[in-house]
Length: 59
Image 1: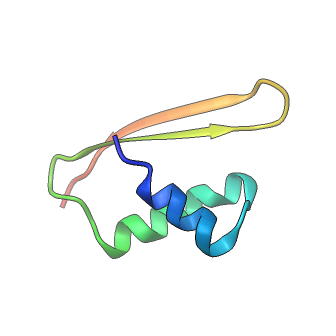
Image 2: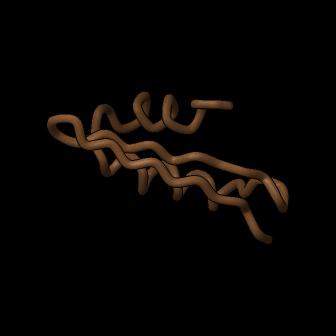
Image 3: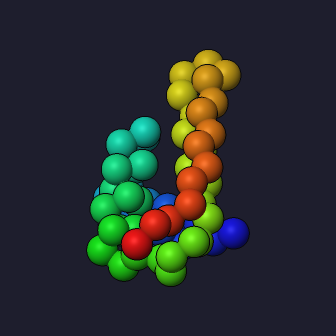
């Protein structure tokens, strides 16, 4: 699993909290993975709030 897009977002924009998900999605659509690639998005909110979503890329 790679965190390169998240790290790139942090370097370019700083800590934008949960909005980082939109920046990482923008980067993903700019250079899409191959058909059938699987991904995982994890977001953390205030307190102990955590959301995780899995997906499969379709061309």
